[in-house]
Picture 1 (tube, rainbow, N blue to C red):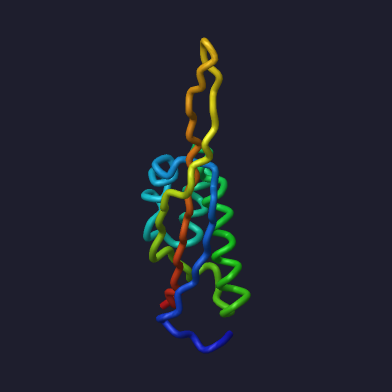
Picture 2 (picture 1 turned 45 degrees about the vertical axis):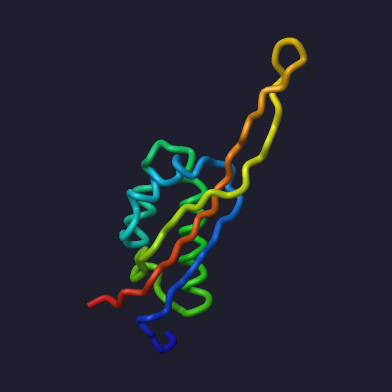
Length: 120
């Protein structure tokens, strides 16, 4: 194991997720500040579609910590997690009398920052 510096932050990004930022935020708020294992368990049993990309991103951040710094996944916790709105896909829905109705399909960007908390 490499020299453990308590200031090291492990980051993972997911961009252009085809989901509304508000739908993702209701899940993000449940796992903010949790440990890695606890967050995975919460995400596994929640019935929302947004849990899948969040759990993939959480696993990616843990893999980054293990590969780049040699940290154990058990000692990781989520220090910051945020969702920002991305660009919207603009589509047209055909309507009566030749009109077109605009449809906006939102996307979001998710950022997870994890830190290492040594076991006592």
